[in-house]
Length: 52
Image (cartoon, rainbow, N blue to C red; front, top):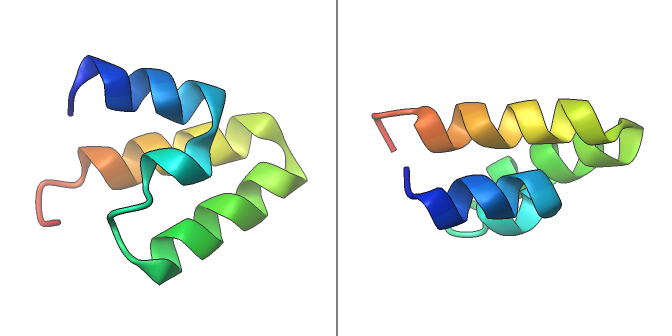
């Protein structure tokens, strides 16, 4: 996980997970609409996942 991805996930979480698939983008976008913090947490968890 690079510094730029972490920074992008703090500024705009859906853009940080754009290459992880449609499902990830949708989940992060919906959480981001519910609140900024849940979107950021979801984006960081998806980016920190070593399997993808």
